[in-house]
Image 1 (cartoon, rainbow, N blue to C red):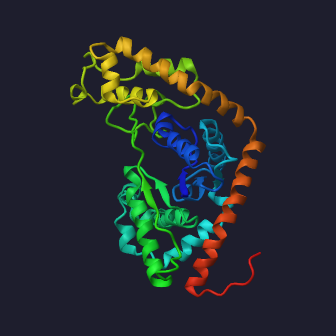
Image 2: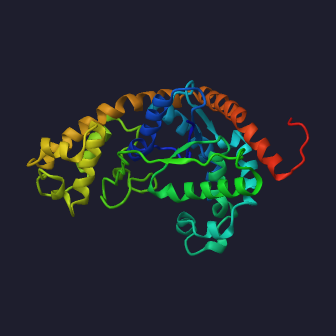
Image 3: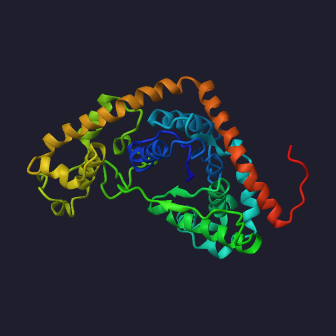
Length: 341
């Protein structure tokens, strides 16, 4: 079993990132445990598909590295690296571009969303980045890829590209690429904004009060939870009573994920209580969970050299795993190459 997943290095990880993805990465690392079984990368090549500030990208890559390690990703057990140090990602993307089809990319929902009405003005990289995503996982013969609802279409595209490449250039006995299967976390934690229960918690929201950042201290967490949008009604005793109460449902869901229970379990404890009692309990649980992560994050962030060394070691291991697959893809396509430098 080999798990591969990436995250954009935009920095400033928040509670939604942690509960929706990173905590599950740590669990997979702990379950698989062997060297090379889990590869986690900072998707800095993907980041340049949109307008960006180079200094912010570099700083964000190092900040995200510190955050991942603080959350529990162990560079001695998982392969942690940034794409830019593994040129095989970009090489394989080009080789797969002959197999991918314009019609497939035109149907990608995120392309339509990110390009908006000005598709002619969008970058080529934005249009073709799903092919790079396919290369990200096929390069390592990933067997499983953690995906949320918004990424399922991308994994389906990766499987389509791999299947067509295998059909066109491989053989039934010796396929070039493994077709990866999705891992959809059982909790599928979708954490919403503290200011709007219908919008996903996001680092791009202009309001700092909309999210809990992993670097927030205890006082900041307490203040944000206290001011989180709720309503005047008491909490119901059953989940059905949360219907139409988006903000209440979000706060209950956050508590449930942090406590390792479900919505009904939270409501059995707090049903009939108002938010005056529930919010302090939620804030206390958040602080208990995030305080050690925040302390470790601040410690790691102060040592740039150590973070660069983590990425360099991870990239060397990733290249070692990637090269055989890339060489097989070149050979399958009939491309003549000299000795690898």
